[in-house]
Structures are given as C-alpha cells and as structure tokens.
Length: 97
Image (cartoon, rainbow, N blue to C red):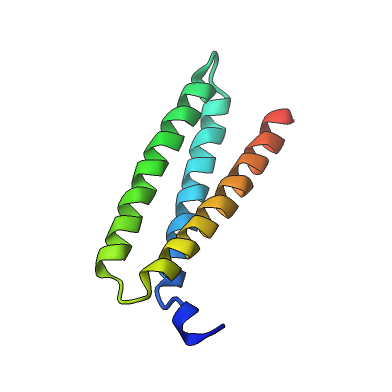
C-alpha cells in the first residue's frame, strides 16, 4: 500500500466497530427472548443509536487524526459496510433457529 493510503489510527477504528457490534449483538439476542415486538423495537433503536455513535466517532477521528482524511473516510465506510453485513447475517441465523 502506498504511504499516502496507509492509516495509522485504523486499529482504533476497527476496535471501536468490533466492540460496538459485539455489544449490540448480545443486547439484541437478549431482547429476542422477550414477548411481542420487543426485538423489532430494540433492533431499530440500536441501529439508530449505533449510527449516531458512528457519526460521532467519525467526526472525532476526522478532527483529531493526523492521517489522510480521505483514507480515513474510506476505511470508515468499509468497516461500516462489513460490520453491518456481519451483524445482520449473524442475527438472521440466530433468529431462524
């Protein structure tokens, strides 16, 4: 990878995404056992809160990181896409059981 495309703070960003997805996944699995449409409401709430949290993380990284801002945004979008696909597929498998 060329020097200008490397991201020094990428591990922190990856760790934030991983921890957030794991915590939200376990909370959603707990809400699955409750009666009614609790899971749907919990999923929508967690998706909204997670999105706003990710926007705050992106803003903080853009303000304080000395890395290339375009590379940071590309890494962020890639992590967001990959972790959302991972989370939805894992939840779908658990719900189908």
